[in-house]
Image (cartoon, rainbow, N blue to C red; front, side, top):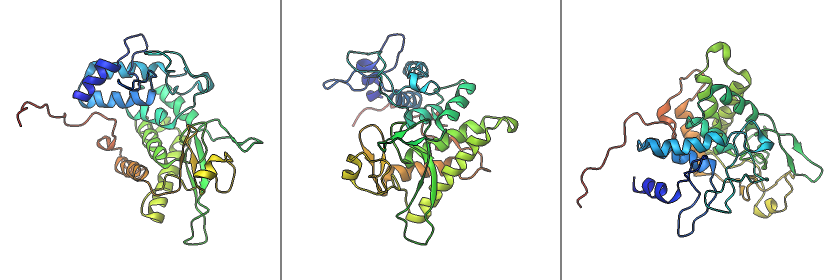
Length: 299
């Protein structure tokens, strides 16, 4: 509660966009991140701070279609030249966590917009240009685990990239995406369900189950290559240096705690298509029982 209070005092923006800035003093940063405001919304909801929750939700909602390159999704956020900067960076990407976490957090209440966001985000990427750089539409991709040695088959896996500027599937983002898509489908009647989105949920979930069975955990990427390979910038190489986030760092081919944990959340949320979704496994949902309020402060 003290952390939330400090962010409200030092980081809140009281203009028409609302939201919270990226970093507090003494090394403050003035940008407003859509992803960080999703996390602020969830924290405020957890602690039943309606004002802070509305402040974050206001900003998230207004970031829809602010990036003209991705008119059916959310902007990364604002620039950071001045306090509560409202300018839109011209080179920002569509980011998977922003897209899907906002839906898990119920930051977007317009179901038609939710369906549009999901259809756009799950479009397949276009491939590569003549320089070997990714050319993007949506975030959906397929990767082959060519380094798998136990058996002849090299699994082809489906999931989402970290951002529209990256390449290669990132598995924590994929688990979160599958949860968001399953949540949207659960709110539709049978006749209105988007079969393509439902198919993407199954592909993502089956791919994550496959990785768990193969490795006993989930790697950040199934693409080989080291950091130097990633720095070469050859996205279409056989071993490009893992999955490029497109934001300045790669996710290399190592078993990863975050990716494994998000896979666990997905399987708790909905282990198969026939299961109902379990909102207790949604880290952005309102908890069933409220967080206790401290009344005893003595040591």
